[in-house]
Image 1 (cartoon, rainbow, N blue to C red):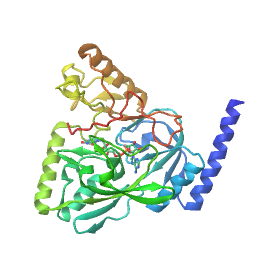
Image 2: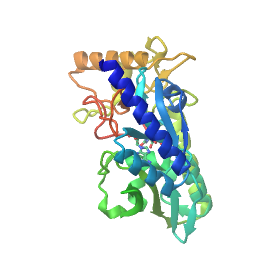
Image 3: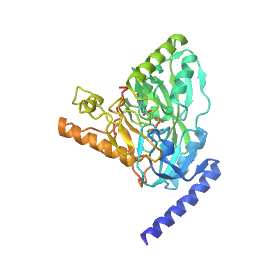
Image 4: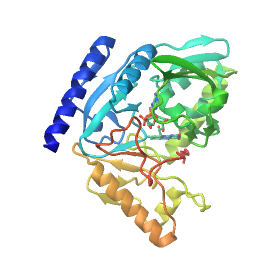
Length: 335
Ligand SMILES: Cc1cc2nc3c(=O)[nH]c(=O)nc-3n(C[C@H](O)[C@H](O)[C@H](O)COP(=O)(O)OP(=O)(O)OC[C@H]3O[C@@H](n4cnc5c(N)ncnc54)[C@H](O)[C@@H]3O)c2cc1C
């Protein structure tokens, strides 16, 4: 009986969703998996992936889904997410098609949420605009970077954000950057809020100098982090009570290279968990992460907190209900 009810509810939801997507002209796909959509290349089936292409379309879409009570989560490039292997019964709103064009006006640039952050850094640098060159090596979209105030090498996106465009009541609304709290890898945007784009205010500088600073940040990153591997960046936050970073703690316990099935503690950077192979499983990455946490707890009395977001199947939320062990204040350092 319960199962039939659930099936009927999904049927109703699916019908409503198809109507909404058709009316708004948004691409709606079934049969996608998180393994295709996240940088760790693991994670189970997703009921629906919807890909709006314009800010107005995205704003109307979330409004209609909210009105219809349809649970959704925003996804950029999936470079900070570990989605579990289960069937995820909610809608993933993929922002990657919302990439449009950059709009330059003097020191300002307007950018849609789906635009690639590394691409943006190159493009503004070429225009002789400085302020985000340290962010050039952070994979992901501008929306994902805004959401968690991404930062590296002395630059944070919030510092240069003059305004953020968000979806409210079906419309695109501009929020001044000064009204947003830009904390360390954490912002005051609230659950269920969709970010559509931003206007950044940068500083004029010589394009050659900007390029040189970008190259410098890139080579520092290349020297310390695995590249070409499937990771989500740093897996755990640095413990506030410790003078030593998480990577060093794990390294000194001799865990570099430790394995659990398809997951491995990176031999290059001990705070990176990488996955390998076609059938890699989130379960392995989670089990390995828990093994690391257990040893750090036992040997150092430190409770490591997840820095990646853990997305559980069957959470009918608009935004991921972040596990209490998972990130609530994202702390990302280019270690
Ligand atoms: C190799 C590697 C190195 C990294 N180095 C760094 C680093 O130095 N510094 C750093 O800060 N991060 C780093 N990261 C982490 C990651 O790249 C950043 O967190 C990035 O900003 C995530 O962007 P994304 O588009 O992939 O977001 P996703 O991972 O797709 O999403 C992250 C969160 O943002 C939300 N979100 C995404 N887009 C929107 C939107 N438009 N509206 C509302 N919510 C949205 C999602 O719901 C989710 O909660 C690294 C990752 C990797 C793989």
